[in-house]
Image (cartoon, rainbow, N blue to C red; front, side):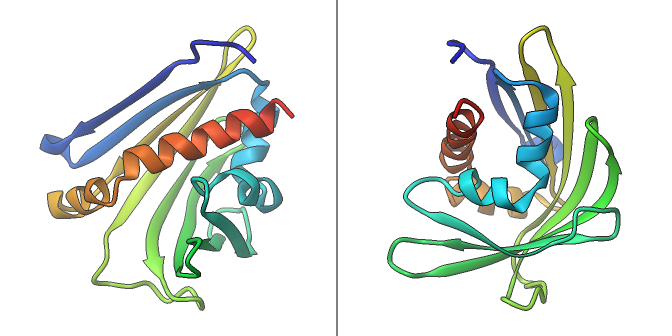
Length: 164
């Protein structure tokens, strides 16, 4: 595995955004598949020791991913990722929100617009993720939930998956 992979994480409170830029030592087709196929997402999306489990995956514009984040004590948190636009192997934009097991959005919880962009370098792929929030309090809620450490851990899981 390539050492010193690029990892940038920044919180832009002025514009209600979180930006993540992460490099993976794998071709873009493998990285894209890991972000868009439920059988692969379930293997890396949850920070250890948690588990991600897909209920529904329909990766197309207008489709959605409904999944559970399962905590070791048995607590289950549901999320719905609605795909707004997709440019194969380049970019996808999605609305992400907490929900119930049937995909009904929790209107009291934080939601965000994720823009995921993929670019290939000589021997690696860069994924740039922008999370945009309607209000600063939504961003702050995610920060308070320790999103940075959890997402960083999940991305490390993806490194292991891509190298297996």
